[in-house]
Length: 125
Length: 125
DNA sequence: TATTAATTGCAAACAATTCTTATTTAGGAA
DNA sequence: TTCCTAAATAAGAATTGTTTGCAATTAATA
Picture 1 (cartoon, rainbow over the protein chains, first blue to last red):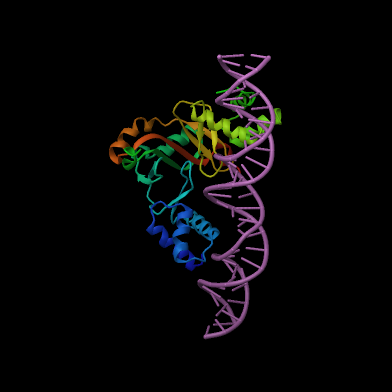
Picture 2 (spheres, helix red, strand yellow):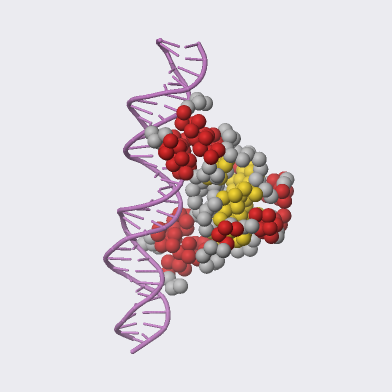
């Protein structure tokens, strides 16, 4: 893969942001580098997530988000402010084996998203 | 809620189909009842899922799907043919409590989607 | 049966993402 | 260093999935 200015700017934005959407990455890069195109942001995010450099998260009811934490973990989503946090769920360790035996599916991975209200939003009206 | 012909037709389609997308429901109803509009399908599906009559599933990388099985369960998605199956994961029973204590989030629910290849697709090229 | 609020169909708006095409660029070869 | 070419880009049109505004229609009830 070519090492373009655009890719570098996107990697920097990913470091600076927490679970950003593609559009948030675009806004961040665009403020420094106004000529970048949205299609480029989507293309690069897609490519580097396919190559395993970042995780591509599909969050119910909203745009996809990207995550630079690569170890196995899952997510908490606040339904009010939209914030996404990491959470680890060791209860699921090794579950692929059981699911594969029961269902015949060859499990490539799984995603678990909890939704609710974060501690900041619980008391807000 | 009024009991319209459109709603009845959609409920029947939901019974006949397995984890359909809104568009699949529309196609099914439309073949019997050509005057129905897509907006009506989306509106009715949204309303009956909000009322708890069906589940509204947000499956990564594709259109939302609807599920008439109401007890707690999760999903397996085949990355090749797109099929979605139910699976139960008792390992997670009661996990909301632990997550709430650790994170402060008031958990309203959670969704777990396994992705991989179904037994039919494993051997296909 | 008349009333009325809920529901519908349609078209247009919408958001997120992908595609198309002409142009530019990174990185290796000469 | 300069040239070459495949890879990557910008811009915006196109797609996909879904929602909305509105005038017309209809189900439920009085």
